[in-house]
Image (tube, rainbow, N blue to C red; front, side):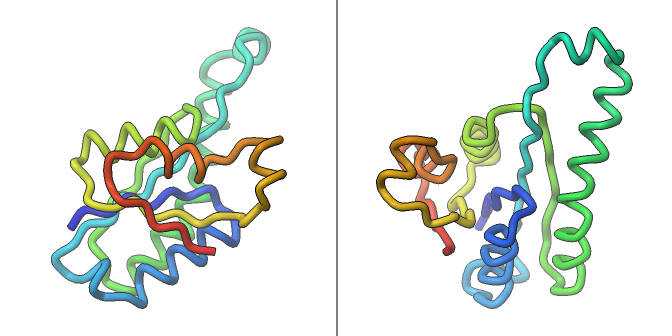
Length: 140
């Protein structure tokens, strides 16, 4: 089974990751976990002010801060995985990666905001849940 794990570096990502590794029926030795992390799109004036190389290096460093502990954790648990990151809206990256990889499941942590919170501020989890072509597991 191919599983997409949406990673934002929060404690909710850690909970989703822990859930995956403790349920071998989800992420066993024959399965692949694709860890996906989205960096925010910076305004063009930032790139113009500091240069494309500085922006690219900054985004790579920020992505590595999220992905390095996940790699370390998955290595300890002998899970077959790969990590990807890109500059994109998070829900779009998760959905695009799931489609491209022909994933069977998307797993993500959720902050568990109430109905009013989701209506006012939007939710990556809600967007993925409503637009995904494959099952989505939300871990709270």
